[in-house]
Each structure stands twice: as structure tokens, then as C-alpha cells.
Length: 466
Image (cartoon, rainbow, N blue to C red; front, side):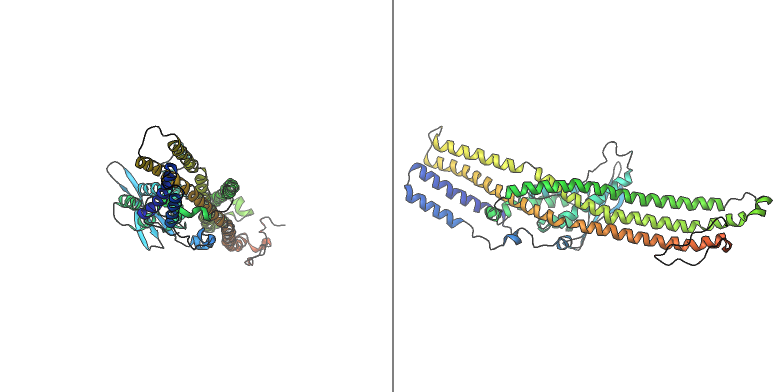
């Protein structure tokens, strides 16, 4: 989209409103009658901005692919070691933007101010929610403070990347200031940037022509799309929970494998003397000593399982959380009462104008009546234009969500790749362990010390002779 200076946009809207108001006043008072009325309408048409030569496809951002959206920027959010004051300690984050090639330090309060100003600047756009600043009551028992801080860091990273990859939000001065300003008063700079611009409606060049770009049944399309997206949100909540359980099982498997290896090492370290009867019927002394060496392989297996859990968490669960954050921001946008508020203001202003024209309560001069009607017509026109512009923004955001639905393939691909890599790495360690077991129990048991080729099933180790 292209943008205007706030003052220029405001003057354009006011000129349209006053031309319409004057035409009503002169028609009401009979000053010039039909000729004057046509003259004023001519001036109104002269003040209309020429229609932009922009196709609807380009205007709505439909030409951008998901890959292009995701590649707009990649912002990293890393924890900075805690700084402890006299009474309180706070967490700071190192924010690094690939697009702006900048790295800045931010606190949660900076994110909070940035988020608040985004909502004011873009009231008709998807602005992701921020994670809570502090742990909720009852959460501390289930989640440690370290885990909470790490979860909040991940959520802040998803938030800033959703903003940095949004076709409209990513081009705004607010984001550039947040990602590049290196001073200590970033909150003041953010508020200054907002005061210079105002909300999107006052700076967008096509705000007065939004109706021309809307599809014929915009309200109906929005209603059906909203229901579909809300249903997808509910379904993906279940997928996310399953993926989180898979990652937790991999981490639990890593812990069990590590503990299993340690228990083997404990058995191998047992110094209890072997009685003569055991020496005569088995080689327990030698076997017991050999078990201690197997703890190395099981520690390696535990490490591979832990890596698998991290991959599932970083590549699968995190992508699902990113997608769900986007869907939630659309749900929040679609449930905001702004559209009804605009329509209500429009209706009230229209009723007031009609009452003033038909039954004025007090004797007023022509100039006073003109001024009063001009103010009310200005409010009516602004409400009409805002209503159409808000619907256009909502239509654009709906198209953007549908574009992001293709992330389903990315998520499934990440899941499959993580499983392939994890099973391959685990299989390599198990294969290395198999011949050691064969040597441990001796070749007299019919076992082979040959390494099993990939893709084939190893020969079972026989523990009891036939």
C-alpha cells in the first residue's frame, strides 16, 4: 500500500465532506436552488482523488507466496544474562534482525509499549498477542521459573516475526524503530513515531476508495471464512498437543536410556566377591566387569534421544505455535467490536443531521447551520469511509491467513524429517552396540559380531544356549 502524510489525508477527507455539506445546506435554504446544487457537486467531483491504477490482486497481496512472506525477515530473540538490582531482577533480550542488519537490547516493557502502539496504529489488522509478563497463579507448581522464561522468549520471538513478516506492519516506521534504535529511550521514540503517523486509515492513500476494491459480497465471504478459520484453529490445537507429547516422550526416553546405562555401570562396579559355585558354572566376574563399559553407548543413545526431542520441539512444536499464534490473532481481530462501533456512530450522526435540517430547535443563522451540518457530514463521511476501509483490511487479512494455511505442508515435512533423522542416528548407535554384545556373550552362543547393514534386521543375541 501507499501512504499519505496525515495532514494531507485529513484535508482530503474534510474537503469531500464540506463540499457535500454545502450542497445540502444550499439545497435546504433554497440559495441558488438547482444550479447551485449542481455547482457544488461539480466541486465535489473535482476534489475526488483519481482512482489508483492498482489491480485488486496486487492490492490484496495475493501475488506474494508463503515463501516470500516468511523470507521478509528472520528475527532472533535471545536471552541476555540477568541483571540484578538492589531489589528486583529483570530479563533482557538481544533482538537481531536479518533484514535491517541490526541488533538491539529490549526488555519486556519495550515489547508491551510496541504492542500497544501497533494496536492503535493498525486497528483493523492482525496484531499478535504478547505472552504474559509473569507466571499465572498455580502455574509455578507445574512450570519452573526457568521454563517460564524460556517459553516467554519463544513466544516473543514468534510475535516479532509475525509482525516483521506481515506485508503491511513490516513496512511501518514503528517496526523499524523497534528493531534498529539503539538508544535507551526506545519507548519515547516509538510514541513519537506513532504521533507522526496516527492510525492507518489517516495515512493510507486508498482509504477513500476502499469500497471500490471490496468484493460484492464482502460480509458474506468474511462470515464463511471466519467460521472455517476458527474451526482450523480448534483442530490444530489438538495437533499441537500431540506433537508436544511426542517431544516430551523423546526427552523422557533420553532420561531412561541415560539412567539405564548408569544402572549397568553400577552393576559392573559391584565389588562383591564371586563365590566358587558361580565361578564354576558361569563367567559372571568377567561379564560383570564388561557391563560397565556399555554405559558409554547408552549415554550416547540418551544424547541422540535428547537431540530428537529438541528437534521435535524446535522444528515441529514451534512451527505449530507460530501458526496458532497467527490464527489466534485473526480470531481476535474478527471478534473486535470496532465494526459495530463504526456503524453505530454513522447511524447516530445521520439521525442528528436529519433532525437539524428538518426541525432545528433554535433559530440559527445560515453560517451556523452550514457549520453544524458540515461537522456532522464530516463525521458521517468519515464513518462510512472507515467502515469500508475496515472491511477491506479484514478481507486482506483473511487472504493472508489462507496463504499461511500452506504452512501445514511445512509442519508435516518438519515432523517427517525429524523422525527420519532421529531414527537414523539412533539406529547407528544400536548397530554399533550389537556386535559388542555378541563379543560379550561369546561366539559359542551362535551370535555374529558382524555389523548389520542399514535397512536389515540384526541377528538376535542368544543369551541362553540351545
